[in-house]
Amino acid sequence: MLMGQNPSYYNRTALFVDQLMNGNVSLKLFRVKLSDAGRYTCIIDSKKMEASVQLIVGAASSPIVNITGFDRRPVVLQCESTGWYPEPEVFWLDGEGNLLSAGPTETVRGPDDLYTVSSRVTVEKRHSNSFTCRVQQNHINRTREAHIHVPGSNSVLHELIILSLFTKDEL
Image (cartoon, rainbow, N blue to C red; front, side, top):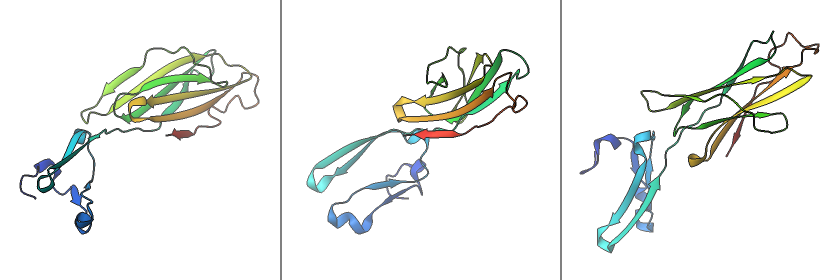
């Protein structure tokens, strides 16, 4: 441990020692934690120089969509996504990209400070319904999506609950 180093950074930092003579005083931080967020300042006493950077820490994960009441009309779609920081928003979209009216988003903050969000929307079964659950956090510029197709009541694939479920990562 370096003299004056905060113990919470022990074995998680490195300098590019071979680059110091070239002016590279970069600090590499390993195994980043939520608590690492904040302002970092580099001070070079001999040159009376100082520079700061703000570290923003975030986490995101893909949502999972489930169908309940598939044998009834209407059906309820539930979307859940775990492991987010900061707290994200949840949106439902129809196949044309229109925003759907959903119930309130349920949010739970775990002991690890990560958020789990879940949302439900009730939809009518028609000939071919495609829906998207979008979970996004604008502060860290992260969006995750899950898409689902709900076959209409006249569909040959009536017994198939989920035709496609995949995620999309938009940076």
